[in-house]
Structures are given as structure tokens and as C-alpha cells.
Image (tube, rainbow over all chains, first blue to last red; front, side, top):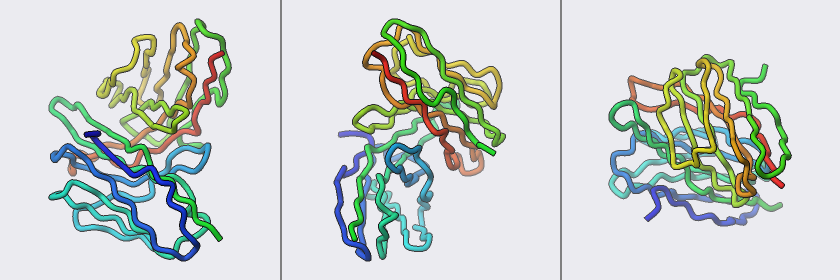
Length: 113
Length: 117
């Protein structure tokens, strides 16, 4: 099993649709979780951190399910500008200041007019 | 002001050459990273330095050698370039969160597109 897994998609949805992505992780001791967005030929940018209690930022909602070891991203009222690749990131501190930082392969979203 | 900058933006070179990519951040962050993104768009971490100390060293050929002269700079030197090294290389920085034992947002540079012919 891969350490971080995402459905690569592509997800093709019409404007205004609600779409959800999941990201599963294998290390139950993982500590920090993030969703990043990457536009074509650009650098990744943070979309939102994922907190234990779940968090919302406008049309975006992120949730963490530690029991089932996955994080999710929900996008409501999709806009054309939401078309991008969404990457999940899982982080863990190991002993001696070592870190494990794993990126998912990303889920491609295309919002169509 | 550019937060994380990389030079050069494009690099075309022949197999067997040695090249360097430079990265600088002006955010005052204590951690810097090098990533490789291949043609399949898979973003893989290569190295990370925290306060000039190497803290992540993934399975990367020893032809790749990072150097961090200070907290604000992390350069990547590549010896004996191979065709498979062609990719986009991203530098990033972040600030540790020791209270939450995690890391904060990573800020990425614009990437260096390396083509080995």
C-alpha cells in the first residue's frame, strides 16, 4: 500500500457542482495534513491545512478521519477557476528531528462551463 | 518581493555535465526543501534542511548534493547529468511549528525546468 494515495481522476464537473476528494494515508502516527493546489506548469500553493475538528474556508471544507486514516476536501459551487490538481500532504516528525513528508500524486479537477 | 526564488528558471544541458540550481528565501523560514516533479507530475521530496542541518535525505543518487550555506539558501548541485534527471525542480521553505510538532505552510519557488539532452 502506498503511504499516501489519491484518486488521480480526472474529475470533470459542471460549474456549480459539489465535488469531493479523498486522500488515504498509511501511517497512523502522522501529525499534520494539508491540501495544496497546483495549476498547470506552476508551483504548488497551500489551499488549506486540515485540522482534527475539520475546517472550512469559503467554499472549501477539509476533514480528517484518523480512525479510517483519510483526509477529504469538499468544494461547493465549483468555479471554472477551481480547475487544477489537488495534492494532499502528510507529515510526521520522527525521533532526532527527522521528518517524513509524503505528497500524494494529486487529483485532477476540470470544471466545465 | 519574491518570497522563494530559484535560478535558473530553465536549464538545458547535455548528458554528463555538472550543473547547479540556486534557491533563496527571504521569509526568515528555518526549513528549506528540494523537490523533483517528473513528467508524470509526481512531486517527490529529495532533501530538506532545518537551520542548515540535513533532516530529510530521501533515496536520491549521490550525484545530487545539496548545500546550505545559511538558513536563507539551499543550492542543488548535480554531477554527471543523465536523461532521467530531466524534470522540474522546486525549492520550498517553511517555518517549523514546535508547539504543534508540525510544519506550517510550504512556500514554493517557481521551479527550474531541467532538460538533459
